[in-house]
Image (cartoon, rainbow, N blue to C red; front, side):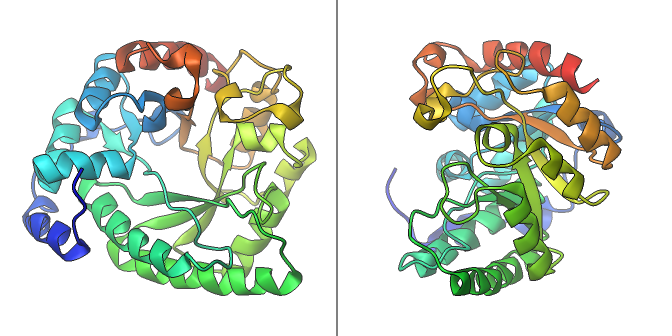
Length: 306
């Protein structure tokens, strides 16, 4: 795709004011927000374009999606941002989250460029109706205590960028991060940021495969968890050798997902159980189309969150 400036992209999005008042999805198009529900993260269909993936998910009866904003942008450059929103509405899909932006909290020479990327992403998230954006920690440096103090300030700055667009950023701790790798650290940072547009989320793959403990779930305050990625961790290979291709469908590994769900419900979590597997990096998923992927996801996840 040819690179475009942010100004050029926003010119394409000039229909936003009309869009925000028209073609609003009906209640029947929305997932049941009174309970946990199945959601499809678009990374699981990375070999397919935005339109094909969304059509496959809708055909399988999915109502909640977590689009990859880079894929949405590719579609929008050919059609328009408004067309991306119309596609979701016409298919009865709700973008309950969006993915993603790296490098917002860690000190880095790339941080200014990351903030520029964040600006077009929160604008596009607003257009497609997503009110949240995943921001994983992927730090690889050797950090000191003062870096975490800077990180809190960096997160506030990013939240201020997202706030005018009605988008909440979500800190995702990652088992491979050297900056925020556990639920306790993520909670500590988000609480210190103390900004309505920065919340904490959790990925069960990073939670169980990393340094967090099951008991850490008790640290969550009622309603504090804002989003959930829902996958399994295999018994083999050993965890030190595991990477993104080793993620498994829920129920195919060793994570006590039912127990985790029970605690999260007790902690008043209501929202998506979003399946994030990485098709591009996982040979076993290479030939699985979006409809097949969503059908298997529903069958795997629904019994675990009921």
